[in-house]
Length: 303
Ligand code: PAP
Image (cartoon, rainbow, N blue to C red):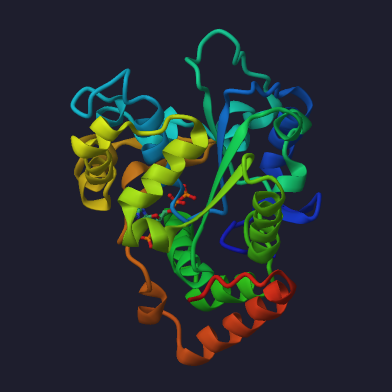
């Protein structure tokens, strides 16, 4: 299938859809990654707010190390500071040295579904912060992301939409991905924090407080009263991050030859953009598929 992936190999691996080039990375990660109890892993489907969550978690856990004026986020895209296991650290099956170079807590990210995480993450006290989003908005965001590459600039939205309806998108099906982490968050609330993009937009301060408590970096009364939480919310807001020079002009290198301009991670940053792109019948169709897939969980992602 095409799936906006050009001629690249794309298929099902361990029950989820994935580009062939990531399989050696995933296997190397599963085989070699040794989690530490202090580690924090950000887990997401693509295009649900990963970049934002990376900036937030980095800012929260490093706030005693850096001020917002000297934070590395001013000079590096959040993806460079919180690297993906499969797209970067273990790219091409390499085995990185993660023991000496990274200050604690180590921050990592992944799009890999829960069942396929390295066992040591599941067995340790490593914390997982998961964010999801109305998948209809993720579909639109993903379509723009793929089209940012010259070779895929004419990919029809209709094809992208069909791919998501069949659950055949990168790291999908979306519903399986969400359910895997959702169930863990219910069974082990100290292990997995389940967040939504829409809540982060509506009430960033309280969501930032949740992340801080969960990761073991709670805000003191003085910090709360002194506007520290609001400061992090403002610094990590879409408008601020998007306008940082590094995020306007930088280039990110993933595995192999895959590169992306950093501005591709900051498009519109709003809730509900699918209403401007998908027809009422498409929305109804996808919503029905999703409701069926999520019915037993009681979870709803489209409202
Ligand atoms: P990735 O999976 O490629 O890393 P990810 O960061 O998860 O992408 O998602 C990108 C989406 O988050 C974009 O949404 P949009 O296409 O609907 O606009 C991007 O604009 C949005 N985004 C990035 N940073 C922020 C932010 N600070 N606040 C709100 N939304 C953001």
